[in-house]
Length: 425
Image (cartoon, rainbow, N blue to C red; front, side, top):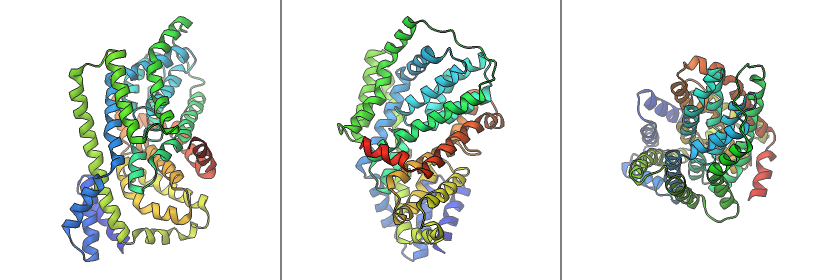
C-alpha cells in the first residue's frame, strides 16, 4: 500500500502540472499523511538539510565552467582541431562530431548544451556536404548523452549526494564507459555511412594541422587536467570545479581573448539559475528519500525483486530494463531523483558495488535523454537541425541501439567498469 501511495501521489502531482521538485514534496507530504505523522517543520528542516551539502558546491562551479567554455571559444577550437585531422576522411564530419562530443563531455557535463553547441557548428556543414541530416542530427544527439557519464558529470555528483557514494570514485569509474559509448558511435557511424555519397573536406596541410593543434591544445588539456588531478589526488571533485572555472576563464579571457569582463555577469547569472534549479531538485529529492526510507518502500521493492536477488547480473539486467522503460516517460532528473533512493537499498542488499551501479544507472538515464517523447536532447536537436521528431528518430536508431548494447555489455561484464576503477583509484 505504501508503494501505491508513493506512486499515485507522485504521478498525480506530475499529471496536474506540478514541477518535479514540488511533486516530490507533495509525494513526501502524502507519505507523512499515510503514516499519520503530519509535521511541516520536519519537511522544511529536511529540505534545508538536503541543500546543505559540501559536495553540491561542485555543481555551480562546473555549470559556470561550461558557460565560460562556450563563451570563450573553447568549443569552436575543439571542433576545428578535429576538422583539421579527420575532416578529410569519408564520413569525416561524423567522426569530428564524435570526437568533439567526447572532449566537450569531459569539460562541461551537460548533454543538451554539448549537443546544441556541436550541432550548431556541424549540422550546416554536414547538410552542405550532402550528409543525411536526420542521421547527422541523431549522431550528434547520441554523442551529447556521453556528457552525463564522463567526468565532470553533474548527474554523477547528484547521484553521489543522494546515494551517499564517493563522487571521486564515480568520476573515475565513468571514464571507460563514456569512452566505450564514443567507440560504439564510431562503429555505428562507419556502418551506416559507408555507402553515402558525400563530399569530403579538403585535406589540410601539416602546417594547417599544426596550427589547429597549437590553437586547440589548451582546450584539449582541460579534461586531461581534471581527470589527472582526480587520479593523483591533487584536488577533490569540488575543487576540480573551481580549477575548471579558473582555467576556462584564463583561457577565454587571456589566451584566446574572446571572453570579456562585461560578459562575466551574464554568465554568472546563467550558471546561478541553472544551479538553483538543480539544487532545489536535490533538496526535494532528499526529503522524499528520507520519507521513502521511513515508509519502508525499499523493502517492499526488494520483495518484488526477490526472485532475481540470487543473481547479480540478472538483477542488474532487470533494473536496467525498468530504468529504460521509465526513461521513455520521465526526463533525466525526475528518474534520477525518484529511483535512486528506492533502488540503492536493493542494490546494497544484493551485494552490487554502489559505484558500479551508479555509473550504469546514470548511463541508462543519459540514454533516456534521446528516447521519445520527452528526451530533452531530442527536442534540442530538432530545433538546431530544423527537422521533425519523426525524421530525427529515423536517423537516431542505429546510435541509440549502439549505446544500449554498450550498457548491457557492462551489465554482463562488470569488470569493464570495476577493473579500470581499481587501477585509476
